[in-house]
Image 1 (tube, helix red, strand yellow):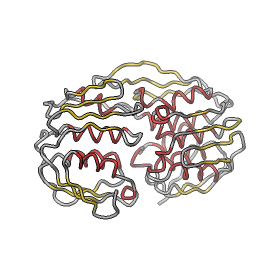
Image 2 (cartoon, helix red, strand yellow):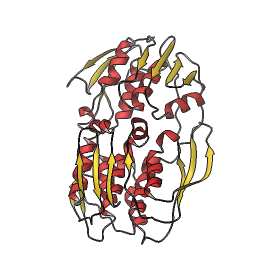
Image 3 (tube, one colour):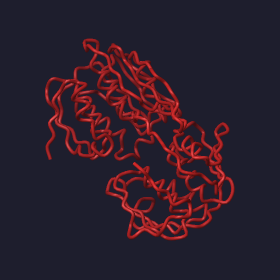
Image 4 (cartoon, rainbow, N blue to C red):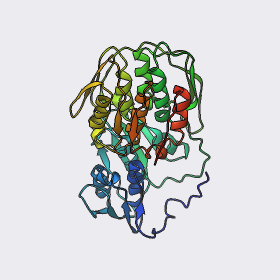
Length: 372
């Protein structure tokens, strides 16, 4: 894919509302770019995205000088942005445990005169900082503080996008739950292994899976990549996953971790995952619902989950509620059984991982039939 940039000040007024579909990351980053433009624009999304909170991104942008009006439910899309050029830099404390808040502020900081600072209490994903540094933007990280000087000149660069670790995680999980009787190794090539994303990988190791990194290298963009290799399956042990920084490093894989925990003899505990309530669905509740449908005893609160593993699963009929990670987690669970299960409302999978059905079928040696 080739992108022909127009520079920081080269964007023009869009024709009509910008419809983002169901991608919250895109909505929040585009919102931040619009905040620094000398024109007004509207931003909208589908029903799922329009139910997700935007206020923790909107407020700092307004503090920087943008005028933002909610056109429906307060705190959510759709909204209208009247940008300010230039924006004013701010010094901000993190209000949520999310790299999206940090990235949104950094993108807005490009349009500010001066230094914008973001202070976080725990390390979150740093893909944005690595990419900005690669492009030559004046950005610094000093402990818990990330600083960006607005107005930096930067030029076009070629970018290699690593394989997505969150997508690879579904294959790792499907392999892990096949158990000791499963023959054969697993190798996933050229996957991004950014340290801020490796929580699921490390927890699978703690549970007993013999995972290794091979052919490690750093891309020019600063992103580390490697082949993930597992020579054989293993008997899984229950796990305790807690701490804001650790949970941030696997926030998208929490449903998968819960699913894998069902195959460990004993109780696994996942804490500090309150952020999951504001994803495509309330993923604490939807994950627990999927596990219970398969016969896995699960308890949960607003901030944690307990999975009582070691029991035999039963085939199930589940509805993903349009959440791609829930749909794929259910498919991974279903792949462990000889009897068929039905997963409804799973077209959402194609948006984030178009090859998932084919890859899971090949790995688990199962047939997956799709219907409209």
